[in-house]
Length: 193
Image 1 (cartoon, rainbow, N blue to C red):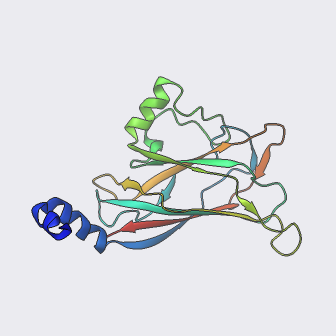
Image 2 (image 1 turned 30 degrees about the vertical axis):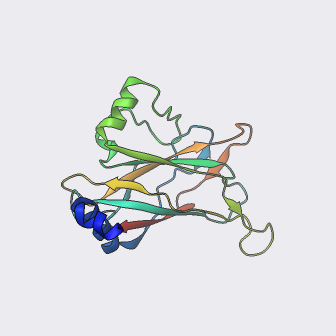
């Protein structure tokens, strides 16, 4: 009965064929962080590029997984970070603000317009990372993996890249977190053709 259904619905059949042809690509991105402290709602970096997120210009893919690792250091993140994804580089529009300022995401008309103009694709919230043991060579490092995300990524007609920003979601503002450039690495698992 399933084969009859697929034969009768060629679009569904083509969709399954397309998914079967996709493969997993791994893309590593180290965003440029200012060497400063970050508190709740701070924009942590200017838009970072996920190069080759789609196979050809204007194409689409699926974000399957994210692994975040942070370098060794005692004063690093133990709070959540929200990642916002865009099809168009948000630096080309106003309203984003600068690193280490309250991003106030989606609270004003200009910021909401920025999300629309930059072809906002979606948000993925990363919960508290797991800290490595407090002794030994990896003391202070942390990691986090999120799988089965399924977020569609769509590049513009002239690009194969998409972009993302990070916003700190700190539980307590009494203990600001200090970062330096290169402290965070994101490994994206992307299903693309």
